[in-house]
Length: 253
Image (cartoon, rainbow, N blue to C red; front, side):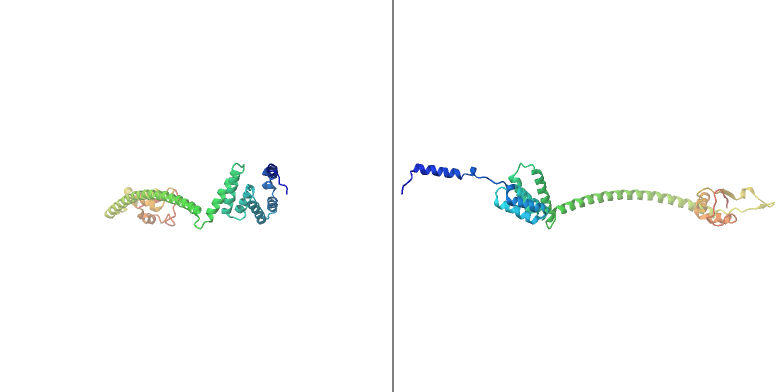
C-alpha cells in the first residue's frame, strides 16, 4: 500500500476543515424556525397551550431564543397567571437583547409580574401595606375629628355656663319680683260716683307680632308665670289662651 506524503495529508486535512467551518454553514434565525412559526400560528388561532409548548421547544433547541422567551413570558403572565415563570422568561429576553426597543415594555411586564406574585402570597404583603397606609390615614382623620369635637365641647361648655348665669340671674330677679308682689297688696278698684279712680284703672297693652301671654307676662311682671292672670282679665276678649291677634288690646291686671 502506497503511503501519501505528510505534506499531502496536511493539505487534504486543511481542505476538509475549511469545508466544515461554521462560516460555510447557513444559520437559521430564530423567527425562521419551524417551531417558532408554528407557535405564532397557534397563537393567532387562540391555541395558547400549544403555542407555549412550541415556544418552549424553540428555547430548548437554541441557546439564543429571545423572541421565544418574550412570547413564553407574556403567555405565562397573561394567560396562565404564573408570574414566576413569566419573570424568568422576560428577564432572559432582556439578558439576550438588552438594547432592544421593547426593553422598556418588557421591564414594565416584569414589574406587573412581581406585583402579581406579591398578591398571590398568603400574607398579601402589598395589600397589607396598603391596608396599613389606609389605617394610618383613617387614624389621622379620627384624631383631627377628635380635636375638633374637643374644641366644640369646650365652646359648648362655655356657652352653657353663660346661659346658666343668665338663667340664674333671671330666676333671682323673678324671685325678688314675686316676693315683692306677695308682700304688696293688690290694688283695689274703688268706685267714685260709678267711675274708677284714674290711678287704679287697669293698664292696657296692644298685642304685637310674636307675642304670647307668657311673653307679655314676662314684660310686665318679670316672670312668664302670670300669663293666667292676664288671660283671666281678658276672658271676654279671648276665646283661649292662644287666641291672640296682632293689634288686639289687652288689660294688664
